[in-house]
Length: 134
Ligand code: FES
Ligand code: FES
Image (tube, rainbow, N blue to C red; front, side, top):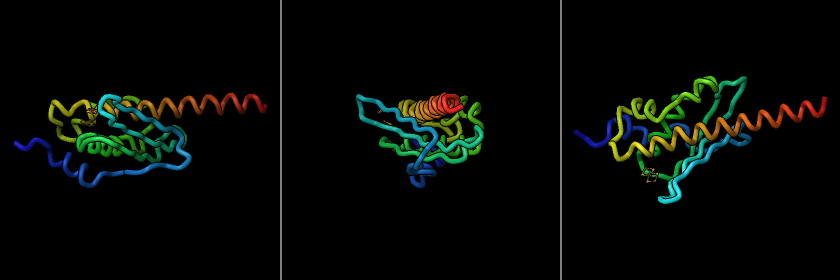
């Protein structure tokens, strides 16, 4: 059996949603200081729906495939659903990853959570700002 599924290879070779978003509503960056791998997720959110998402990943092929698949899974989804995304769901959508590469998909889960948290804290700042104006 091949080490990597066809889906992993496809998303590694042709990653979806690569890049950054100017004026993103939420940005999440996570990394592993030991190995230096970094994953960054940018979200555009309208009415609590993720309308656009882009990623920049400095990591291995599995990390790139995981980021790509994760962005596809959350596009068009409400924030509440996006928060439920686990690395297990990402891995399953990729038809599996080798056991020693599972940690790479955890970066995707963490980066998305971080981006949603960033969005939520910005919302709070905006709410306080509009209260101050009123
Ligand atoms: Fe860097 Fe796994 S080796 S995150
Ligand atoms: Fe480091 Fe995959 S992100 S080995």
